Image (cartoon, rainbow, N blue to C red):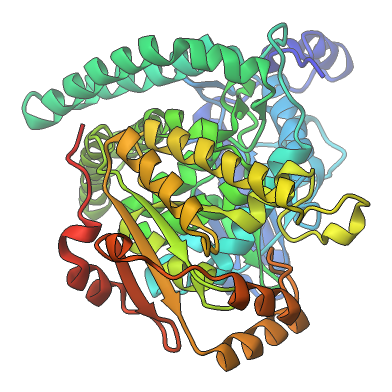
Length: 553
């Protein structure tokens, strides 16, 4: 569905207001500040818990919190990246905010309410002259924000997995841009990237920060030229969609034990109609900035398994740099408004985001590893720790086999008439895994292929792929007694929710078909006892040169 820029949505509103409400007038920032303070005082007088009434201020809005409700009011500002300069534009943005956030948080976003009266005596839903509008929401505990929980060590891998599924679900149902669409054109993201440099150039003093910015600008321009055909191709493939646009931890929360996305960008469609890889990149960047690369790679891999968008990895470094510079720009805006400790914090954030952006431009070390092990040997569960430690992209045979047949990762193959476990289906699956592995390596990332690999021929094929790509190769051989494997498989089937559909009968056939590692293969293998949690630091240290990464390109 094509959408017009927000500034064009309601061009008749200012005249309409003039005709129907001659007393109403536009507010400037000073008058709006008076209005917000008066509303805050009014809420305190009528609240059952006056001490809990508060105002949270950002660089573009105020959020008033009272009892179980919240009201978000947009500041009358015109900045280089948004226009809240008129009441009509602010109301249009309030309506957009309600619409786009109800996609992921319908229980949180209630409606848009008018603010009436005078700046000195405003009312919510009053009958006086119209002053402005607010988005009415349900209040939630601030300690449930993921940005708070990460500081307390309250984010875990199960939450990242659930979050990956939530984000993938948003992208799956989001409207898709086309080459003729009003938004989502490649030049739009390039303009947004350029705007970051314009703002930061005026803020950064001469010295290291300015030099970092010049380095980032040169790299960004080079990447835009290189990736331009890919941007066009991604748009044609439907990978540019109406996403979230601002998916960092401050806009994610826990609600009834599940992650919830809120506060999607409403003020500029160009920042919301973006490549899905640009959307997930914001979250990955934020976790990297907060020194949680383990969670960053976990959520990225989870999202990739749900979406299958491994082709988009080529764009990820570019989007990581873009997102780091977005946050650097936000920090620079706070820097211009703050004093004292808050100013010092904004300065530290600015420098931290610039340093991370530079880090994201550096080539990554690459490798091609494969697992080997019978069903229930812990290949998928235990390699999660390896992914977190090394930033490896994992390709699961169980997931990709189902994708080839149009099934979701956790879906049952019984839902379709076709048998997805025939020899021909297996041949197609491993051929596809090989293609994906080369694609991930070409994008600049290390890769782990998670499959049983009980046949010597298949292991040899992937060793040849590693040689073809010029990267180290290693077989991670997971081992456990047959009795343990049987018990694990029964337990997994009882619990459900896993991509693997192997039962004990499948295990028995694998035991018969297993082709052990030959003498030459042993030189490229690490044996892993999976009867206990794997200490990957010890395993990789013991492996030495076997798991050494390829030189940076």
